[in-house]
Image 1 (cartoon, helix red, strand yellow):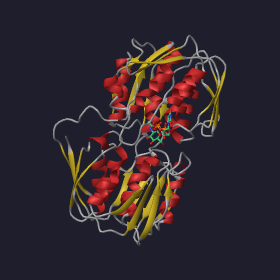
Image 2: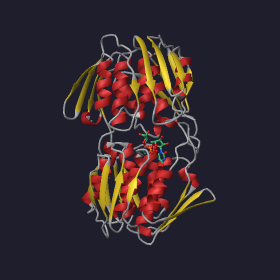
Image 3: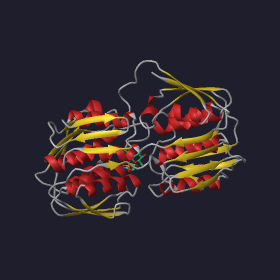
Image 4: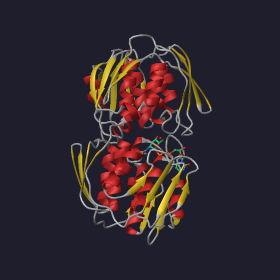
Length: 425
Ligand code: UD1
């Protein structure tokens, strides 16, 4: 298993290019199953989760060609409607093929995603929505089986806003007979990006980005090309890298308007930020102060930036209370940060960080994608060398992270040692 070593203490300076959003690319790639012919998707991040989605589409019989940040996919004809356990267990977002398979081919068998490091993560709302659209949904031997001759439009209310759930239902409803209304829908920019791609292909969708999405089903979709939106979480991670090292970084090719909550919180902590249309300049020369953060569905503060902000708050003066409301056990990074000298107490779903702490490099273990990012950031700020084990988690969502950080002046090295285990989420 690869490990990464970081020698901290250097203020990061320079420019970094932000890649395409993993969480937009995944549903966009899955949606090619809805048919229409060859689609060319650009700005696709070359991360392990995207490669996994490509493999899954290949198993289903689609033609997938991935070159650099461009993916050419033709899922006009597929040969299987089954997403096997071996792939789903490595990536929960595999469940995104459920809605498109069912809507286009009348059936889908998708391995039930298990629990993962950040919580139980059920898919009950995906299934309830599809059932409301007339699907016959059952559970057999660890697999979700769904069948429907043709889905019918329905009024669906989500008990909690779910990102992939909203995406699954929006894709399924695009080919259903009649009108579907998804209430209390998730509003993330990645949902809007998927809706834009579907609409280019002839889907009739209104309200994506708000909490009520109306989809008027059509008989078929056409082909289209699409450029994936920039990754707001990757962008946020590099901003925190600049802030935690008290450096000055510029992000290129990002969408600041997708990052309001984070930008406001960084400013509140004392970071100087200037925003242009597709650029963010950060300057973190002066001491930072502790702030409180509460994760929420978009446009609230993203849970995917929580670990990074916990790391940052260890370097700020005073007490910060970080409340996680989206996932139940997303503080796996805290124990590791403590081993580096952080003063953090976890009380239920709140982490209370008292700073500033002088972090010291240590061997630490990555537990999930964003927790790993939090540890990298801590390592960049720490005195001495941090060794991050199980670093394959990072590869699921960050493209060339070490290279990009080195471009900003970080001392960070990946040590290649064997292959990653196959049971990651
Ligand atoms: C997506 C993102 C992930 C991000 C998360 C929250 C992708 C591929 N992944 O994950 O990076 O951290 O949104 O922003 O886009 N829930 C239910 N029943 C369901 C579905 C969800 O109770 O059927 C709950 C979950 O347990 C969680 C909350 O809803 O507490 C939000 O989860 P959800 O938005 O579904 O997360 P994902 O789509 O899995």
